[in-house]
Length: 442
Ligand code: 9WN
Image (cartoon, rainbow, N blue to C red):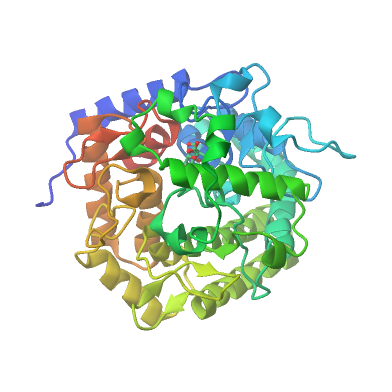
C-alpha cells in the first residue's frame, strides 16, 4: 500500500487509548498482559510494557520491572510467569499449583513457573533510563538508583542463560519449551515437537482455560497444547534442573529470535555498565554480544535459504520453516553483511513484507488466524523495526512504523492481527500492543 502520513489526530487518539489500556491493566504492583486471558505477570511482556510506560509513568515502569525480578530464582533465571497471589488458580492454566516449583533456600518472594522467556529486560531498563530526563531531575535520580539495583540481577539472568542453558555447547542459549520463545506455536518448532508425545489424556486431566476466553481457531491446537503440558511435567520431574538437558529432555532448541534478544541484552548491559561507571564490565558485555552474534551466524544460518532457522540440539538439524524469528538477528549490529542482506531480502520477499507476519505467507502451514502461525504481532515488528534502524534502513523503518500505527488505530489494541485484512485477533486491550504504540508515536 502507498505510504500515508500518520495524521496528528490519529496520533493523539491512539496515544490516549494506549495510555488507557496500560492504566486498566495495572494491578497495583505490576501490569498484566490482559485482564481476562493473562491475569498474572509475564516476563517479556513486562519488558515491552516498561518501554511504553517510560513515556507516561516512569515509577510504574520501574515498579513493573522490580516486581518481576522479585520472582527471580537463585540460579538467575527470571521466570516466564510471576503469579499474582490474589488471582484464583482457575483463572489461568497452568497456574501456580500445576508448576509446583520446589521450595529451596533463598526462594524468591513470588511464586512462579520454572521456564524463561526472551531476556528483553536489560533493553527495557536502558530505554526507561534514556527517557527519564524528559520527566525531570527526580526521575533521572530515581532511574540511576533503579539501574544500580537491577544491574546485578540482569547480569545473573544473562549468566544463567549463557551457562546453564548452553545445552548445545556452541555458545547459544537453548529453549526447553515453546512457551520460552514467546512464539508458542511457531512452525519453527514443528519438526522438533513431532518427537514429543502428545497425550490427549493430559488435556482431560488439565483442561484448557484459554479456550473459554478466546476463539479456538486463534489459539494453539489441542495436540500442541498436550505437548506443552507434557514438556512442563518432564522438566518439573527433574526439578527444573538444566543438567544433561540435551540427553534427557524431549525439546531442546536454539531459537534465532531468543538468541538475538540475548545478544541485544548484552549491548544494553554495556550501556548500563557505562552509566554506572563500570568500564571493564561494559567491555565484557560488548565482547559477549559479539560472541553470541558470531554463534548465531555460525549455528543458525542456512547459506542456501539465506536466512536464520531454529536448530534442534538433539538432532543437530535446522528447521526448514521460514519464521519471523529467523529475521530477528537483524537487531545485531555485528551481524555479517551478507547475513544482513539475506534477512532484508527475505523480509522484502513475498514470504513476509511489512508488517511482517509471524510465518512465511507462501508456506503450506501459513494460517491467517492462528497465533504464531501467520498473524502479525506488534512486538515482533517493533523488534524488526529496531533491526532496520540498527542497519540504517531508515525509510523502511519509517514505513513499518506508519503501518503499525495505522493497523492498531483502525483495529484496536489487539494481541495480534490478521496478516491480510488487518482485523484484531486474540484478546483486546493487550498491554504490549498499547505500550509499543506509545513508543512508535513518541
Ligand atoms: C504462555 C502473555 C504471553 C506472551 C507469549 C504468548 C502467550 C502464553 C499463553 O501469552 O503465551 O506463556 O498462555 O499462550 O505466546 O509471548 O508472553 O502475553
